[in-house]
Amino acid sequence: MSLQSWFEKGISFEEYVAAMKANKAGLLTVYQGFSLTSEDKDFFLKLADQKLRVIGLTADWCGDAMLNVPIIEHIAESCQSPLRLLNRDENLELMDQYLTNGTARAIPIFIWIDQEGNEKAVWGPRADEVQAVITDLRASLPEKEDPTFATKQAEVYRQFRARLVTDEDLWLSVKNSVQACLSKLNA
Image (cartoon, rainbow, N blue to C red; front, side, top):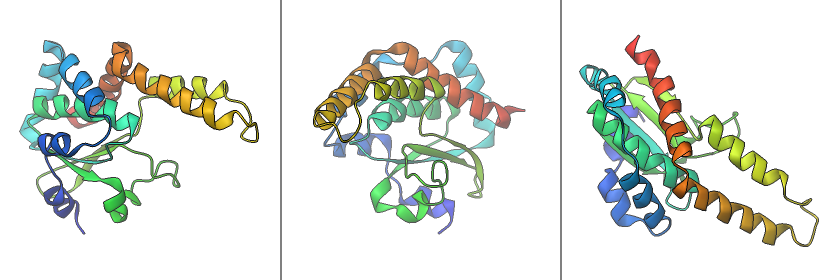
């Protein structure tokens, strides 16, 4: 299936939010709390002439999606690039073309396409600073064989999700990472 067809199959941000069963409050907190500066808006508006569109592979249970989807929606709005979202697990044929490190179905993944459906840029699943946070948190976990591992892992992921919703520096790291990715399109 062409990227154009995948885009047409996707749902809007509003439809995605309406259908969410997990992380909806967190996603809305990020969406309502995040904003682009006028300089950011100017940068992203320069992409509007390219008439790009964005496909996002995501799932509402994913903490990274809770953080990234609303920020990408703001960026897409500024670029005048419609965003269409697809559930990862219902679209594995596309997901398997965008594996992280060639093996992981890590999400979210965002694919910018032109009017002909050609891939122009890909970003995801995390900004480097967000990866550093989860790496540091995971370093505190005991070995998997430890009887407390599952409980401690659940606590680490609870802390991670809480930080994604409240740490505006992480929000900016996502914006900066996406902006760096898209800067190649403005060259």
